[in-house]
Each structure stands twice: as structure tokens, then as C-alpha cells.
Length: 256
Image 1 (cartoon, rainbow, N blue to C red):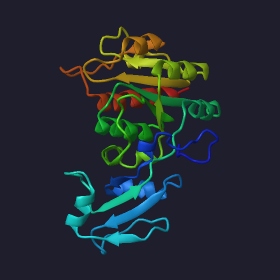
Image 2: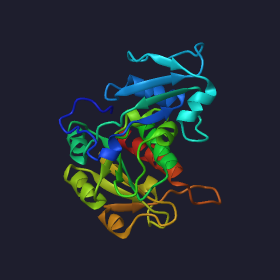
Image 3: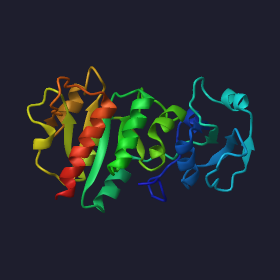
Image 4: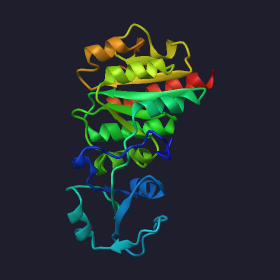
């Protein structure tokens, strides 16, 4: 799942996105240092006694806690370690289709208008746990994969490609052409997620909390499904819903 050596890899085209940013927190930094597609620029830690991960040849700098925190956004939970690095190369949706062609089963997650970097990071983390091939978001209004998202992803940003597309409907069409069945999560859907027939390659589509999926995205789904639970509350936030749905869909696929 890591971003390695594929023909479709390309650098970030927008000059503003090419600027380096700070990743922080032990899991996020360790994963970035282990990723050969990350160009690390500066590694900063608070104490020389801290157990360091392999640094990939970059020499760590030792700063006071106050000096490190001055480099990061206010309130960043850094755990005494931070890494300045360039963004990962962009991966287009065509590359995901190419990777899926070589697999018997595949899961892709699509987020429609989800804009909170913590939610996207949490979805990336769940996607890594359940073996999703990528997380797809719309480029417009989506947050950049900076420190807050990487911290919430807990290393998953380095192994699950975050694919940004201009048009979600066109991206879904390309995934369908590659053999994917598109399932949209909707609390009002007539069928429960667990009642869906198993399908080898699936796209799980989740909308923003509140408005849900947009009309055109909903109409592009092959099927709509809901999450059923025994408790009195029927709604979940988007990251929790993604985790529950990915668990259910991955169980289906293992039985194919």
C-alpha cells in the first residue's frame, strides 16, 4: 500500500502544496522516516535520551520543548518529536485502478465533502487496519495532509494513498470501469450493510456529517446501505462509521 515506484506518481503540481510542513507525534514521524517516498528535511527531538527510530540518514537536532513547540501549531501533541518533510507525491485515481487490477479483492474509501483533517486522518488509520487500497477525497475544500491529519492517521498517511480528485463522480466512474461496486453509506437506506451480497471489489462512500453525500454522488452509487446497531442511538460520526463499515465489508471479502 505504500507510495512506491509507480508510473503514475507525480509531484504536487500546485506550488503552495510543494511547501514543506511539520509532522509530529511518534507514530507519524516514525512512519514518515520509514517511507522511501518521503523527503525528510529536518528532524527535531526534545531529549537526547529519547529512544529514536531509524532516522534514514537524517541527523536529529536536539531542542528544548519550548523551541520545538515554537515550530508547530499551538496545542500540537508532538510527544517530543517532529519532522519537517515535503508532501508525498500525488497519486491519481488511474493508479489505484491499476493496482486493483492485480488483486482478487480490493476496498477503496471515498469521502464526499469531509473537511476535518482529524476525521480524514482517523479514516486513513481505519483504512490501513482493514487493508483499504486508498482514501479518495475531492480536491476542492479538502484539507492538506499536514501535521494534524498525519497525527490522527498515526502513520497510515504513509501507507494508504490519499488520492485527491477534481470530480468525485468521474472518479467513481473510473473505479466502476475497473470492476468496483460502489456502496454509499446512508442512515435512511432500505438495506443494512450486513445484508449486502459479497462483492470482490468495493468502494465505500461516506458523506459529511449532517448533509451526507451530495445528490450526484448518491446517484453514482450502485447501492445504498445503512449501519444497524442494537443501541438507542443510530448515528455515528464519519470516522467511526467508516471503521464499522470497513470491518463489515472486509469480513465479506475474506469469505469470497
